[in-house]
Length: 336
Image (cartoon, rainbow, N blue to C red; front, top):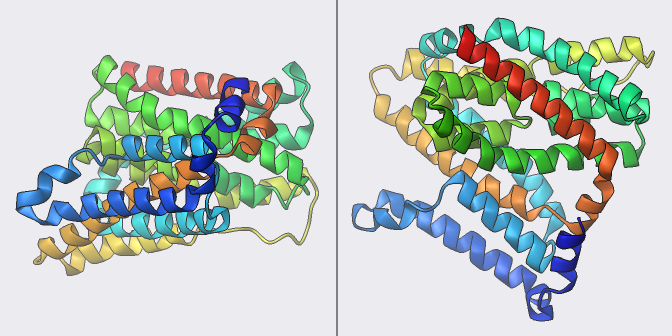
């Protein structure tokens, strides 16, 4: 934490002064290079623009220059991610996707419940965190990161500090996971199917799951996306159970509607575009580029305040719980 704080305070004032100009320049370069993929003679310029690289650029920018357009970053990253996920549905066949995700379905159910129970034990009993913070981190790890935290936060009447610590913990681990998991997958020799299942279960947010899957391969991307979005549907029963456990009635449940549109996109591609596969492929290609740009927005959202807000114990709960679910899911995948 001290390293990152000093990095920002000691960065050249010129970088902080012109951070908006640098932000626009970086975003323009990334976008233009991605568009070069459609020009055969310039396609080589797009090869370096991958999710981990773009996320790293965003992180470095935020640490050296500070935040630029924080409200825009927050809003556009959420919307662009949702639209990109929907677009990915146009590149998937419903039957094939269901078949690939079927094997991981049972373990997904077991892992969701197990992660919540283990997380609460580590947070409340071992690390002595308050119940709300522990529950938010456990929910974010169990299902889909920030979306789950945002859904259950109002139900348990979580304070802003509780929400910030949980979201910051998940955000930091997501950034690490996007870099770490593809490297570990190659080192372990995981197949596309195995890695997609592992990433969907062990990585928090949909953005990092899809980014890691895309970095690993086409089949891994499809498997990871299908399982993760199925897992994200657990937000609804989680919110209902949470309202019972915390006895909070009348709270509105935040339903991730983009998942429904993702399924609709798969249905359209499977049954209506079967004779025109190039259309679905084109839309899915644009969606992947949108996802890559989303990585920059997410990385650029980091700030020293976010890092400071985490603290040691919430981050330790997140790390311990992450290691447990990652190791357990990997063991299941390798031994089945």
